[in-house]
Image (cartoon, rainbow, N blue to C red; front, side):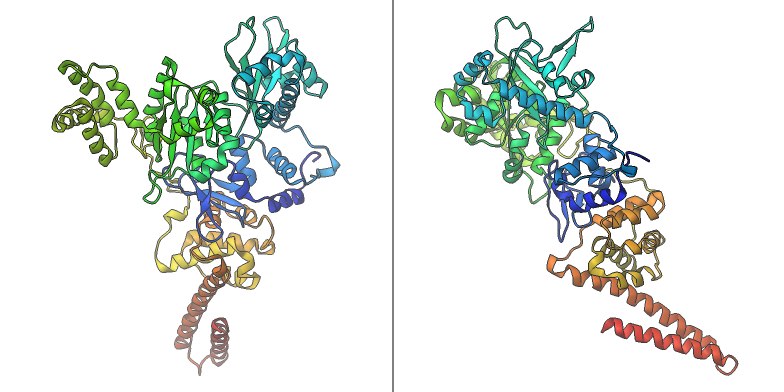
Length: 627
């Protein structure tokens, strides 16, 4: 069929692509043993990582929600692209030229690639326009805020001219009007007339976590511009403002490395922070910091809730002193307990935002603001207390009643006890009285309490990992007896390290009799695929051989961590396959001995002799195996 990518090319692209590099653009991955990596699942909320990636076999699998597949599956699910688009994207990444069946041309797989290309072309156009005479107000704006041409270039800041110039330019590059409307670059009026969405404004490109430009933010410059102060790209097939953070593409490595993220309120604040050395700063794009943003940040941070890392990460919020900033602080506090990391608030002197602080007092002041951050709970309690006259008894009692719910919401008991003491000191009241008010508030709020750390989903439902259906075979549902564990480990070795096991051992291992009926189906799938043992799509071949419900189990076995050091993995894999073969030879020995005992040598001499020969052969094979 013309237009289909050749299977050999798909296999080649898959084999040349390191799945960990691709997944790592979305998820912070850590080593999980020999050849295995893990992180927080991007497909469901979780506190502890159950999402595993096995670069050697090119597969990922989440043991919490059951999602799994190869690099193409991952891109399809994360970026909502077709299979062909995923292959083409990876081919472009590695510089591989794809070929299509019957010499056909690449089919049109949808708009995503075209929309990304249109946005990139628009970004280049905007950047080039910043040096034009018409862009003088934009250059003045940047200069007045302490940003020189090098800073503008670093963040690809541009200028959108008036007069429909962008639309004409992009159409001249071959983009259709429909594509530009879909990308949010031009709009269409009630009378059918089209116009550039961004006109006479300073422009910031908004990129996703992989660095691809998906939208724009535009700042008003001219007095006769009747639009809002900031205008953003509307939601499009590639841009969803609730899931995008400005600056994340620049900050993600330092966020992952330092386990810290600084959330500011605007594009210029991100620029100011990065230029001052706070390279973990990000900002929302025309919307409040919400649950979807938290999911993105936690995945990039590796914000894991376990005994080793709990509380070691930092999420630092900066808020403007105006009403909007105070509302943003309240919203952030409401979601605070979705983080395993500690949350803080950084407030600049005189209520300056990071951009103005850098402009007025320099880079050191921005760094000092972040360094002197205050815990989120302290910030919120003091904010409540600021609304009352603490010089009067009535004011202190009212302040206690208002602050008690804040302290009652603290799930960490050690922290809660500490804040009871602090609140008592700030109010000048007896700690016992404060504790009584907090306990009363906690009891009254119990039926409708907010989601705790660990209760990830909206509505507060349990965050227990989403287990696969009980009827579907799963690694977590296998028996744990030694015999089943041996069968499981041998299959994992063959799937993950077929070259280390070797064709001979693999063939003999899958020829063994299995006690677990579920694993025996996987064994049969491997046996049917042995001709492709070391092919790039080896695991995919096995998946294609087993019945549909068993595909997930094959993926799980292919990514589950093998507890061995890299230098020992070859010995381990051959050893576990050998143990399975040895067990099967022992079974054969036992059955042959039983046959000899039941046979009458005098009555059936030929059959008796044949069984004896088989017994000698099996015993010789066992000795050779052990040697």
